[in-house]
Length: 330
Image 1: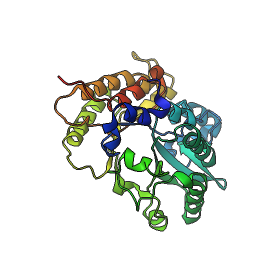
Image 2: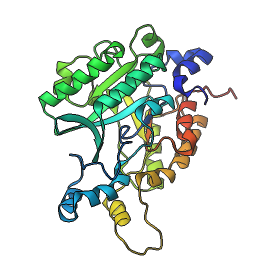
Image 3: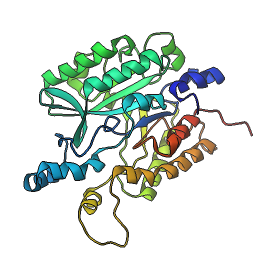
Image 4: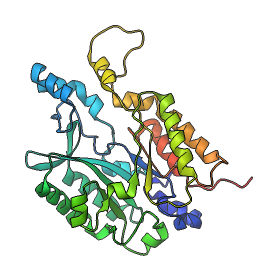
C-alpha cells in the first residue's frame, strides 16, 4: 500500500463510511514490544529481565549474557518513526527507571523515553497529521510516584497538543469525530493511581483487552487467535479496544536451547526474529481468511500486533490494513 504513512485518511477519502466506524471496529496494525529495536549485545540487562538470566550473569559475567540474550530481547528492526511511516498505529510500550533516567525496555535496556516521544511528535506534526495513534504504556519497572510523575510530564510536554483525554472520548469515538478536533493520540496507562491523577490518561484495563496466547507453536497460536476472533466478531457493542496478539512467545527451553552447544536433529531457533519469520506468512493467510469470511459482519480484528513488522516488505501490515477495505458485493 503506497499510502501507508497516511492510510487512515486515504481509506476514508476512498470509502467515506470508514470514517464513521468507531476506533474499536476498525483494524489497526500495531507492533509488539514496539521500542525494543535498539537492543544489542552491549545493552544492559533491564529490571524486567528474568531471574535465571541475572543468576547466570552473576556466574559468567553480564557481557556474555547480554550478548547471547539480545536476540531474544530485540523485537523490532524499525525505530518508532519508521514504524509509524510504515502504517503502525498502536505502540506497545514498557518503561523502566534506571540510573535516574526513563528507558523503554524488554529484558534489556533499549532507548530513552524522550527519544521515542520526540519521534512520535515528529510523525504526528509533520507526516500523519490526520492519523490516530494509540500509545499503550502497559508495563512499568522500578518506578515510584516520582518516576511516574516524570514520565507523565514528558508525555504531556511533548505530545499535549494532540492528546485525546479519556474524559472526552471512549473507544467508540469515530475518525470523523476526532478529525473535527486536534486530538490524534490516545494514551493508555496501566497504573490506576496515575490515571486518577491525570485525567487525560486512559486506564489500560478499563479500555483495552489483550489476551496473551503464550505459545511457541504456530498451530496453537492460530487456533487461539481464531477462538478470540469468533468471540470478537459476534460483538454488537464494542466497549473496549481488543488486541489480537499474532506473535509466538519463546519460553525458557527455546532460549536455553539456542544458548547451549549441542547437536540436534532440528537446529534450535536463535532469536525472536527467527520465530517471526516462521509465523508472519501464516498469520497473513489467517488475516486474509478473516477478510473473506462470511460468518461475521465485522472482520473480527481490531488491533493486531506482531514482532518484526518489517519482515517480507511489511506484508503483515498490509494484511491488517486491508481488512478495512470493503469486500466486493457478491
